[in-house]
Image (cartoon, rainbow, N blue to C red):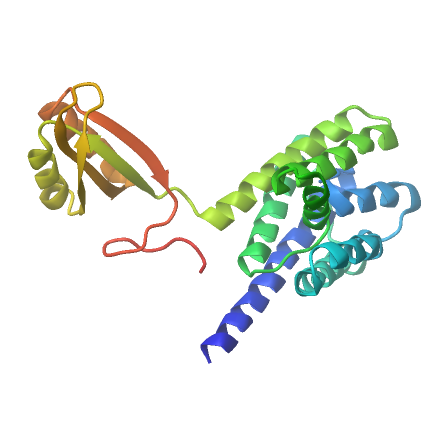
Length: 286
């Protein structure tokens, strides 16, 4: 039953994510000829000259990419990506050609910003459903496997080439500049969806008054933590390090207490994107 529920949830995430990313095309990307990179970017360039449906072009152009991926990445990965590709392409043409969703704005900057955000949000949800829409990630994997480059760098090269080509295709220097903005924003939003929002802060404290600080964390902030044995490299002195995770709104209170209690304390603060445990609720879709 759990396995069925997991598959059902992933399928729902796939549909919702593809719908959102598909809606970004007629509302923001296609009317302004913004090329987000990868196969979809090539499809938008062809659409500009031939007027052919972007979704159908994405499907056709992905055929050689998937055949290449079949040899390189294996059958299982390609099948999972194929499902995302088909659903995504259908939504793009449904919104663009059937429902004829109008452009949301005539302002190119707003279109690039909101198009990148909506595209990234949709793709991030698709990835959370353990699926893919093919394209750049398969090309990036192929480049990575045959050149030894990292996967991220391989995907970046594939997107960079396509976005740069839009400048020559449209005869406008602004075209790739908007494309890079869309790519940057969509990538950041994808990361945000996958990693979560920075709701919590991890704090590492080195102090000569750890007992008082620990007491405040436990009873003043109602948080827990860990005390780790440490040795100062500079003073060669044994001591303790406190490691705790607190809510973002509690950070100023903890900072003020540490500054008052031990002005010479050494404090490191990091963003924490997901915390599992008492007093915290996971913000990620698992």
